[in-house]
Length: 252
Ligand code: G
Ligand code: G
Ligand code: MN
Ligand code: NA
Image (cartoon, rainbow, N blue to C red):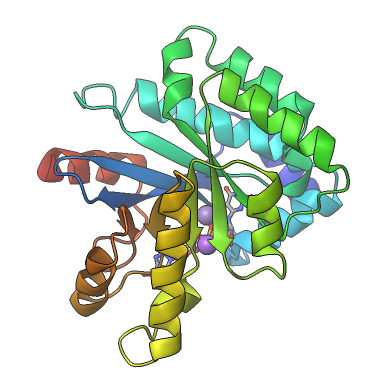
């Protein structure tokens, strides 16, 4: 915990970093990515991201970590990726404590000199997040939308209340959890579920992203169902900001 706190205060440290996994769109020449955190600890090695998030949350550092992540994304947009002539959306995962009113002012402050870049942010929310006040949650989502941010429902289908979430909150994208994509070719139940999620989402005006696409067979299957965006090792693992830039130059 103390290590993490120190890292978040030190601009020059290189133990913490973000990697970016490409998300391929079904439209030609359109690309986005998801930012994922990495912690290379000097003695422990790579710390699992979920453990890092849990430690941060327990230590009350969730908000500080979130701010750090947003700053990194802003820096990448305005240095490594500055010469990409297309707009690349960047998805950022939100942990429990980072989904608060402070997030609004963070986005406004960090993107102060480039407010148009707020339109390139996508915040990923999971249905397993703690929502103790749906009214407040919904208001905050609308306020984020008002300043240009898009919202995605991550790991869709893994919570117990997927439909309730879609009933009460509005999203721009739904990300189908990779557990549904995994055995789609052989398990007809998964095929039916993915197909139905696509149909339902499109009827609601929500774009569909498939996670964990690892094979061409899965990709073709998902394309036939009308999935809008694809993410997974079939296209690329998560990449450093520089390597993601190279991927964009190559792909676009
Ligand atoms: O990167 P990886 O696939 O190993 O991530 C494992 C888990 O950690 C995923 O559930 C992912 O959402 C979460 N995670 C990774 N990076 C971040 C981050 O920057 N913020 C939050 N809140 N969660 C993250
Ligand atoms: O929970 P969330 O979707 O935010 O986390 C994404 C996680 O999935 C990251 O840890 C990332 O490394 C991992 N991931 C990305 N693509 C693939 C894939 O094709 N297969 C598997 N097994 N994991 C993937
Ligand atoms: Mn995610
Ligand atoms: Na997910």
